[in-house]
Image (cartoon, rainbow, N blue to C red; front, side, top):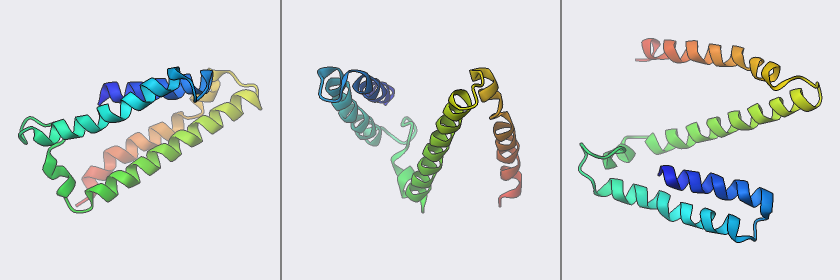
Length: 122
């Protein structure tokens, strides 16, 4: 799975630099998908005590929906982060360190909320 993700990121990065019709993009991008699918196929064949993601994990009620929602929230946070960082650096002419410090209140509040939720949730 790790190699598949690394190849995907490498392919997308090289594609943005050299073009999406070159072999520098196509080879890592196309190799990443079978590797990631192969990870889940391999994990499904392992006994439950040895698998990183047990096969019965996906049969927990609403787990697939929860994973899709988490991916949506995570990706939207990434887009917001990149957009604001670029704005603060390019438009406001701030240093990268100052722009990164602006995100500390959000991270600190997320840490406190994440530590309080398990004690409040049933």
